[in-house]
Length: 299
Image 1 (cartoon, rainbow, N blue to C red):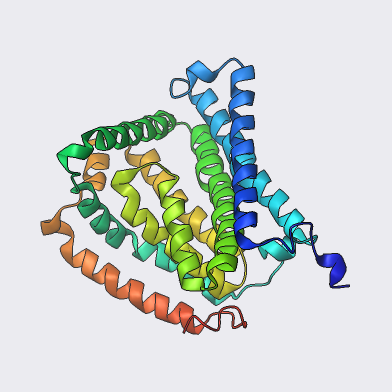
Image 2: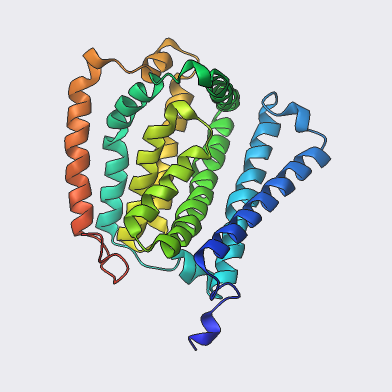
């Protein structure tokens, strides 16, 4: 019975699995580009709300979700078991996770503020200019979606930016990549942080790189400690919902700019409280962790 549960990639080494997973992801990216090109709308990206939403949905499906499901199926014939989809979870743990992603926001903003102050050496001016260009392109994409203030627009943004992106990215980065890295490095701490770094890097937003690494690590530990992919999926979705709702209410107003600008004078005590409650919740979640031989080393 155990033998029947092994997929084609079961006996493959970690590095070989990693390269195969990258191959699947890039195949999905190429397929995504082809779909958008064949639709005749490639030149309308970042100009049309409808086309941008379509592109983001296709990208989530063919770059994140489908490669993850294919890899999981080839690694273990029981795809749900590999991705830990059918595992039960502790409701208290999930509630702690949701509370954590809410209270950690001021701390994330604080770290993001200092991340934005980083200036590369003059010799790396071209690299910094490229990173700034990517940052502006990402802001243009999300800004275009947030300009739609209708209820239908809000619902579509929640589905695409929060639900689909949250599910797809967690299947990709935690469900597959983190487990592949764990197989290579044999250390769950390294696996969590390496996957978090890749997670942040693949957003191509340097000025939010460090806080996104922290977010990725939090989600990674939730995956390990809960024993199911659904906890990081739900928490990631809640994190994105917060951003979408705030943008729906405030985007295009002076208040939105205030939300985007961290003030040391106004926000320091909130940041300190955020740090304290973040640590407390992480300790509670660690104590509520799903104890298995795999996460026993995380002590």
